[in-house]
Image 1: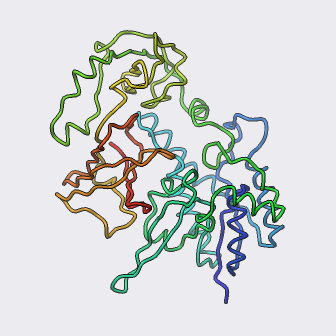
Image 2: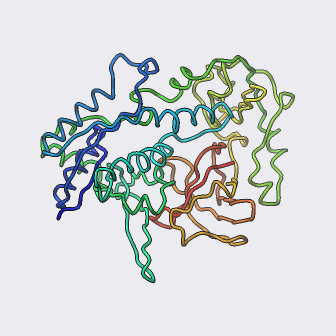
Image 3: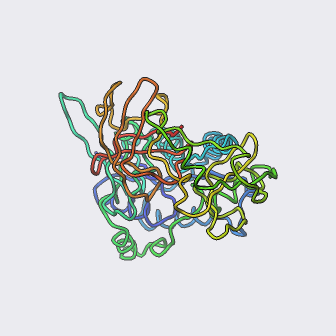
Length: 389
C-alpha cells in the first residue's frame, strides 16, 4: 500500500516539482493550497495574488493528476502570525514572519489538517534536507542545508521540532534551482517560468514595510544622530553579560536630524525609509526607542553602533532542533551561526548559563536586533535556534 503525502502546493515552481518528484518516488500525493489571508483591504496591489496562485496550483495538480483542495487558514494565520508580528513591532522587536509561518502554520495547523486526511507525511518545496539516525533504538531527525547554497532555506525552518521533522519531506532539497526549473519545463508546468514570490509569507505581493504602515498608526518623532566616537566610548566590556548587552542611547547623546513617522516602522541596520540624508555618508538605524518614539542613527556602514560581538537568548527562547546536542549549564561549544536568511555563516562560541544562551562571534556582527532568530549549525546540520533578547 502506498504511503500518502499531503503537499503544500503554493502555485510556485518549487512545490510543483516537489509534487512531481513525490509521485515518481511512488507516493500517493494529495495537494492542498493554503489560503492564509482574506482581507484584501490590506493588499497594496490591483491584482489578487492568492487567487492567481491558487489557479496555478490547480493547473499543476490537474497536469500531475493528483487531487487538489483549498484550505482556508486565514483566521488562524491572523491570530498566530499577523497579530503576533504587529505586537512585536509595536514593542520595538524585529520578528521573522517566515519562520513563524513555518512553525505555527505549515508544520502545525496545516500538518494537523493533513493528518486528518490520513497523511503519513507532509511535503513542501523548501530547499533543505532531512536525514534520520538511530541510536539505542531511538530515532533522531536532522535538519540539513539544501544542496543549492544560494537557495538554502534551512534557516526558515529553525524552529521545527523532532515530531514535525519526523513527518516532513523536502523533495527538492537535493537539487539546485536551475534543475528544478528544467524539470518543470520538461513537464510543461504552468509554473516553470514563474518568478519566486517576494511578498510577505502567503499574504501576497506586499512588502513588509508597506504592510506595517497599513496596520500601525503613524506617530511623528525625532531622529537623533549619534557620533561614532560616542559609541566607541560606551563599548567597553569584560563579561558575557556586558558583551551581549546592546547599547542604549538617550536624546542628549546626539543631535537632532529630523522627523520620522513611527519608531515601530524601523529596525536596527535599516537604511531606506527615513527619507533623511546623511552628510557626507548615508544614515543607518542604530536603535529604535518605541517608548519615547525616537530613532537613533549613525553615518556609514562602518559606524561602530551597528556592530556587536555577542548576543543573548533567554532560556525560555532556546530551541534545540537536535535535542541530543543540547548544552548543559556551564558548557560551551563552537558552531557556525547566522542571524538572517542568506547571511554567510559566522564562527561563534555558544555559552550555556542558567539564565540563557550567550553567543559570542569571532567577528563583530552588523545589525543585531531584538526579536530576530539566531540559528547555529554544525557543518550542514542546523542544530538549534533562539529569539534574541
